[in-house]
Image 1 (cartoon, one colour):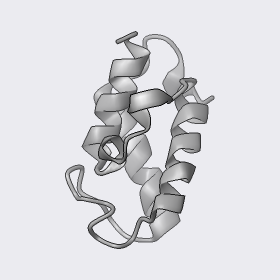
Image 2 (cartoon, one colour; image 1 turned 180 degrees about the vertical axis):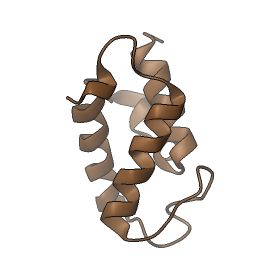
Image 3 (cartoon, rainbow, N blue to C red; image 1 turned 120 degrees about the vertical axis):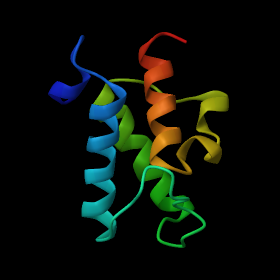
Length: 90
């Protein structure tokens, strides 16, 4: 778990910056927060599982059940919404 997951430090802006950095490092291309990662062809369903593991480890959360839907990983913004909802207890 990184400092970003510590209580009081997680914001949508910090999560967006962290996820964008992770994606840019792994795919070697820039991503807008609303870019459809799967439609671009740069992200596969196998990479989606890597995203799940990265998010769980970075933010200290568990993603399970309906939250594992591909719709939650389609864009940086949808991942940020998922992270903030889970960390808020919702």
